[in-house]
Structures are given as structure tokens and as C-alpha cells.
Image (cartoon, rainbow, N blue to C red; front, side):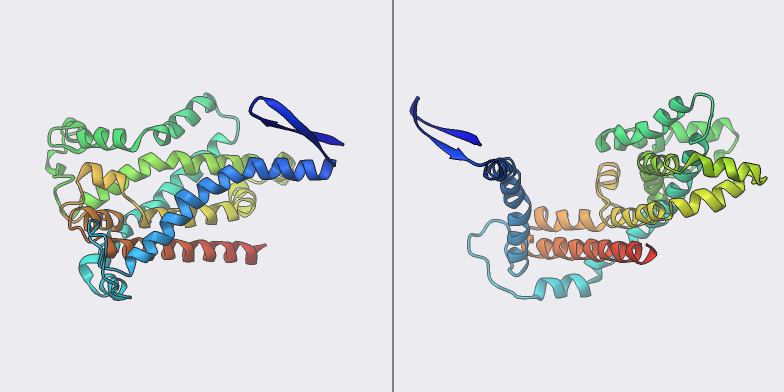
Length: 304
């Protein structure tokens, strides 16, 4: 039997006797009520309000916006100035596969006995620890005229290959996508490394006895063992490519054809004071991410 002391203004009123099961439930309730309250207050309540604003023409200032129904959603889906910026996400989506390929390659190599393995693991994961603002300024200097990249190309005698890396519309999104690859490869690397190291070592030993090469181990042991993790990283890459914000915003401000859907949403809300329309854009992005997540869960469930 447990006891719960009720204190009021410095003195004990009386003791309530509780059985062990009731006391356990009370403790669980007390420990979860605050996190749940914070979740409802800072996640679900703003989401509900954003949906309400998406049905109005609110400009972020007036207290009484007009109800417009689905007009904001119709505008986003039919006006190319809003929805066409998803084309920019294709650069980041394609870059995701290069990112996953590099991460899987190094995770496979470093999962076996390699000299200075811990050092290389740290080198690969370190960029992910950096703040997005810091990475933006690092690569601004890297890409600027006469910066690091131009200096390296000049040293190699490739002066004719020097471009306006962030100013040329034909390559600026590629430059930004490369920055994203450099930043997030370490995250995928860490996930792949953990998955590969969870494979039973006896399987590798049996494969060696049968004369399997390193490539055979990768193709017939590692890949089938971590296929769900690979698929999960692809889904994460799709979601990430849709919600890119900090790198293009810091490095180009979304100018010269580098605007992403998130940057467009923020500009719509705070630059053009179309908060209702921006709320509809946010809801649409949320629904796309939810659909991608559901597809991921269904696909993984079918594979099991």
C-alpha cells in the first residue's frame, strides 16, 4: 500500500491511502500531463489555427478576416507562381540518391576493420552537427567569385570551367543541392552504419568460407538485410527535398530561380501579408508529407 500526503499552506491535512496500482497510474498521469499539454499547445493547436486561417483572406493584421472557403487552395494548385516552385525540389530529390549512395558506400567500408575508422566516422558525421547558418556562410565563401572553388579550379588549370556558381540559373540549384548533400550525408551514414553492424557476423564468416567476395557480401548480405532502412532513407530524402529552406534562404535568399516551396510560403505570409494563402500552402505541404509517410509505412509493411 502507498500513501500520498496532501499538504496545504505548510501543514498536513490528512493521508489518503492508495493501492499500488492506483498510485502507479497517478504517477504515470502526472508525468505525462505536462508533455501532452505542451504537445497540444504548441503543435496541434497551431495546426488547427493554421487550417482556420487557410479558409480566410487574413493578412496577419486585421482581427476579422473574411471567409473565402477553398479559394486559397485553388489559387495554390492552379497558379504556377506558387505550385511550380516544387520544380526546385527535384534538384534536391535527385541529389538525395547521390547522398544515399555516398553514405552507404562509406558505411559499408567502415563497418569492417579499417585503420582510423573512428576518425573517418567523425569526419563524415561532423557536417551534420554544424548549424545550417554556419554551413550557408561556409559555402557562400566556397562558391563566391575568387573563392575556394575558383582557386582550386585555377590551380588545376581549369579556368575555363569557372562559373557564377550561385548566379547562373543553369547550375545554382545544383550548387545548393551539393551543399545539402555535404551537410546530410553524415546523418544517412550513421543510420546505415548502425543497420550494417546489426547484421550477424557469422553470416559474413559463412560467406567467406563459401568463397564470397566483398562485392558478393554487399550485394547478397548487406543490401537485403538493410533494405527497409534504405527505403526509409529514400522516404526521408523525399520529405526533406520538399521542405528545403535554410540553405537556399541563407545563400541566395531564394532569388534567381532558387526559391523553394517553404521560402515561397514564408514570403507570401510575411513579405506580401497573405497569411491566409500561406496557411493553405503550409497545409498542402503537410498533406504531401503525410501521404509520403503513409506510403512508406504501407510499403514496409508489405515487405515484411
